[in-house]
Image (tube, rainbow, N blue to C red; front, side, top):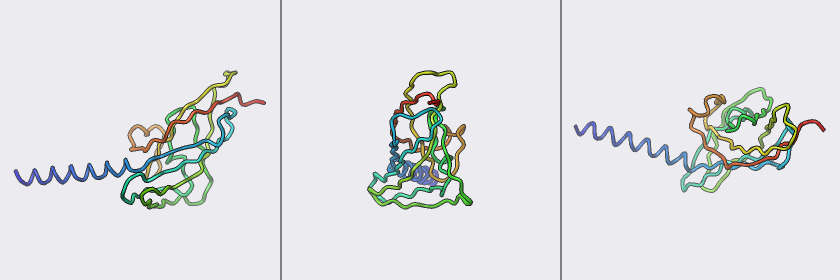
Length: 156
């Protein structure tokens, strides 16, 4: 019986220490504009901030952020940066430090939509590699603040 208790306590300790670490990283996004045409590129600043009291590490991709940052709204299409090698890099953040990246994306209106539409979305960051959009509910994501962008029809 004592052996089971030790195993249970050890498992609980591992779970809670990992859970606490994930909560120490906060994601924040800020679009460069508040109005954009449908299917026009929109750049935003994405920041990961260590809000904890201990050093934290995140794994980032050199250029494949479109599989590491996932939108929670299907009207948002992530861009990507062409590259020869999408290497993983471990970034160590001391308390209060940030990792910043510029991200490109597109917001889509339905083809027959003629007016303005406000689209609100968040981006979820997955530390450790590429996640496909359909698996975003299964993957542990660090969600950003929500932002709202007004989208107008794409033709001028």
